Image (cartoon, rainbow, N blue to C red; front, side):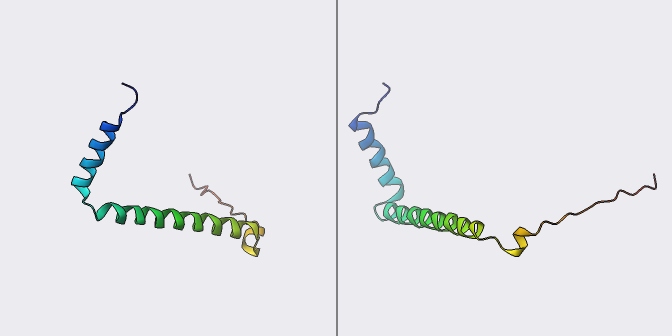
Length: 71
C-alpha cells in the first residue's frame, strides 16, 4: 500500500493528459526549465556582486534616532 504500482502512474498520467492536453505539458516543462535557468543566473549574479565589494558596501553608515523628549 505504501508504493504505487505502474497502474497508478498510468492513471495519473491519463488524468494529466486529459486535464492539460498533449501540447500543454511540454509547454509547461519549458516554462519550468526557463524559470530554473533564470533562478540559477540570478543566484550567480548575486554571488558575483557580493564577491566584489563596492564603495557603498564597504562604507558603514550609522543612523541615529533621537527620541522626542517633550513628554
